[in-house]
Length: 400
Image (cartoon, rainbow, N blue to C red; front, side, top):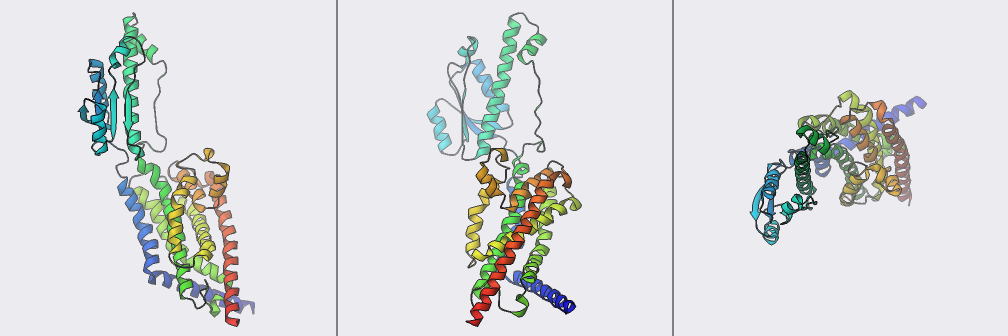
């Protein structure tokens, strides 16, 4: 009896998996998300940020000093790789007009007392204004201006020390007693794609997978007689076989999409990456299982095909902020940090970054893997009870 039961359960499991795969490939909306978005989004992000850093950002310069030192400052600003002096104007109002028309993304103002303050041994000031609507413009303008200020400040200090009788070497050592070298760890070019894309790849996997599961659930409710998540058929009476059958269908598809995203895409865009196929599987498997069971658990709230899209739009940016990547996890409020642990993307992004960008081994990301397996187990239990409740509801509707 037991042998026959297991055989029937296995047959039902295969049938449910096959039916789910057929339903996925017949539904153009799900296919666009699973195949189109899952494969195209990483390429789109990669091409948009392919240049990594901004170069030759156009700025306007207002040089009210009109002295050799003032002109030297402007020349040095123009010589930086980040900025290009596109316009030299006489007043700040003229520069503001250029900024308002979008012809420049920043303004540098050299005040009339610039050289006078330096010659008197006072602290001189320059003013930099930037378009903060795009943070990369802000970064380029202020990095370049700050570098020029530091460089000119050092040269002026060396000249002042030499005038007091010190040799050139003594003056240089006194002006800069500590030498340092600046190296951007794991992102040598300080590129935006190398910073953003690894986290986005994991989030794309989670969001498209949950969205696809939600659309499938909404479609099932629209098609089933009593608008239930589970159709009233013999093979759909076993809760365990339903959960495993549907989950395996999603896992088969996203195993390939996940490998494509986490292995091929970083290689295609020459991003810092250390992962191989054998190394990514121990992280990818629990992440996909946690995401699948999470999506199946919350599918009870998707009454039609439109609700998952709203969920996708509302949650994508907050999840990227809560994962501890764009903002240090140590500075995130404990309440929001606790909320972030409910989503597989938090552990997935942290684990993937450590392995892909920093060269960590699977043993060194043990906490992230344990977190993902715990999520997979907890959300499996939730999915089991959600589907069991739906089966009982279907049986109750039939009897009534």
